[in-house]
Image (cartoon, rainbow, N blue to C red; front, side):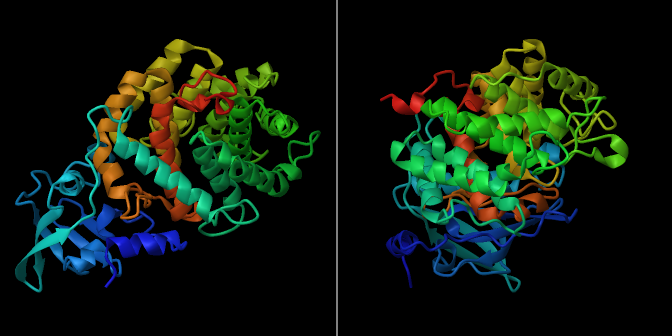
Length: 472
């Protein structure tokens, strides 16, 4: 049987850490999630308090401690969750997930490193003492001066560097062009680590993206080229790279991406996946806000924003602000859509970077704080809800960001694997979009970018220093 040291050896040889066995989040009745360093997958049914063990990783801490698939967790450290699990997005991690996340953190920081658990198996109650790996608790200064969060972040980034393919990509979940979108976020996470020795990884990703995506752009024809959501993320990476290094070698590619996005803003300000505006021409605000973020960052690299495109898009954005939430909804047709973080966070970040409409930016940040329990819910993509949602709070209101991140410690603990990387933890709703991107790479990039916010290096995290990667 492989102990903790054995797990580390396997990891160092390039083995992928345990990945939870997840559904795609489309079921309205249950929710699957990772169980942190235990290397197991839990399932919670709506209105229940007991976690059902869906899967146990071979030779992991759960298996070594006697936990088995099919077990139902009755109590953790002698405690039963006071609240039942709810599929409502407004309940966040309340209930059993919050209980086990906090218990794991405490057990790993304790002297004996034991997690006590009572389970029901074949109608019998069994008491388990599960040995867990040693790690300190998240510091009260989290995430600013927390050694655990820094080690966690470094472990993720190191792993992303290790698993990058020779062509500069990271393996997607389904295929198609997902590797471009995934690659941009993975490269952003690596860039945020502020390590010159990792610049070849970032540049490798950029060159992959240039060949597979940006090369498709025809400057005089906005109907031709990659999807808009892909183009905007490419531009965000290229701009952050130039701001970090002072290297403008990719500026022409950045300009092509931003010009393409400007050419795809319709006369009424709406945007779609590509040139055509879908859904009876009502469009997708998630495209608008990512375009604005790309333009705002590019302007810091001396790109001249197309003000007509910016202003036309702003018309649609204003119409998409939900009267009940103060956040951005699905579109002007559905302004009070519940999945708000990605749209609202990206736009708050764009406005803050551009130095425009501070009142609107502040309102968006306030809405993100108020509805922070919805942060994982971004219409099939938990990843961009957390990446853009947390960034939107951080760049506008750093103090609020610290408070919100502390509330998300149980989530981060449940994502943390036994070898210090991150497992994917999706929403209570549909997260099939992240399955397309690849749970493993996008899950690691998401947690890394959540933690990177405290460093204030990237401009999406409130950074204002140019060429910061060149400075000691």
